[in-house]
Image (cartoon, rainbow, N blue to C red; front, side):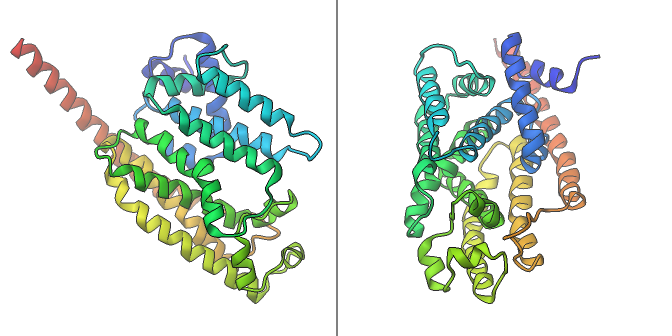
Length: 318
C-alpha cells in the first residue's frame, strides 16, 4: 500500500523519483518543526500540499543554518545562499533536497525569484546584526524574512484579487512577530533580540534584565505592547483570508487563528517567554482544525463539481 505522501505527490503530478524524495524531506521538516503550518496544509487540496511543504522546508533549512552560525564560520549560510541563487537563475541543479523542491515549486507556480532572494538577504543579516534600533529597521528585516514568505505562498493559494498582496505581507509579518514574542528567551541565548531597541528603552528594559529570566513589570509591559502591535497586523491581514480561492481559505484561516492564539498563550503564561516556550495546546489545535477540515472537504467537492460541469459544457460547445 502506498504511503499517504505518495498519493499526495501523485495528485500534485510529481513523478520524478529525485523530486519525490526531495518533497518528502520537506514534508518531514514541516511535520516535525512546524506543527501548526503542517496541520493547516492538510486542509489544502492534495495537489497543492507538497508545494507548501517545499516553502516551509526551505525556510526551516535556512533557519537551521542561521541558528548554527558562529562568528568564526558564517560560510555555510553564504555558500548555500549563493548556490540557491545560482540554481534559481538556471545554473547547476542544487545538491540539497530542500532547494531542489523549492526550485521546482517556484517554476511550477511562477513565484517571483526576487522573493526568494529577499529572503536569503534577510537570513544573511543574522550573521552580523543582533539588534534592531527601531521598528522600521525591524520591518526591513521582516520584509525578507516574513512578508515575502506570504507572497511566495500566495500563488499556491490562488489570490482572487491583487488586493490580497498587502494582506499576505501583513500576515507574514504577524506570524513572525508572534514568533519573536514567543521566542525572546531562545533568541537571546543566540545573542539576538528582535524586539526593537526603542521599545526596550521606552519600557526601561535592558538585555541584562532579559537574561535574568525574571519577568518584571517592565518586561510584562513591553511584551503587552508588542502583542497589541502584532494583533493590529492580524486585524489588517484578516480580510485577505477571503481573497484566496475557496479551497485555500480554511487552510489560511486555520493558520491565522492558531498563530494568533500564540499571543493569548503568552498572556496566559504570565508572559513567561524568557525561560520557557509557550504554545497552543494540541486539543485546541484540533478543535480549530477538525471543523475546518470538514469545510475544506466541502469546498473541494464543490470545486470538483464545478470543474466537471465546465468541462461538460465545453465539450458540448465544441
